[in-house]
Image (cartoon, one colour):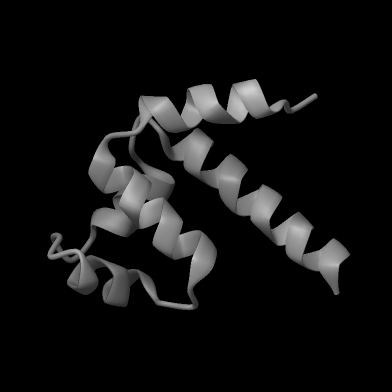
Length: 74
């Protein structure tokens, strides 16, 4: 079961830049490229964060939760 405490702990493990990226991924329809550009990051940071970083599992968990929330909201 996913709890608020677990989510908070997972978020606290992310660096500020990763949290900013995640916030944009969850709250906007920006592409990876647009997020990288908006935050002044390297061209593949968002891809790396979502797929290859040590926190990729955490990021994917938040993205999946966000998708499920959007589905139930509709």
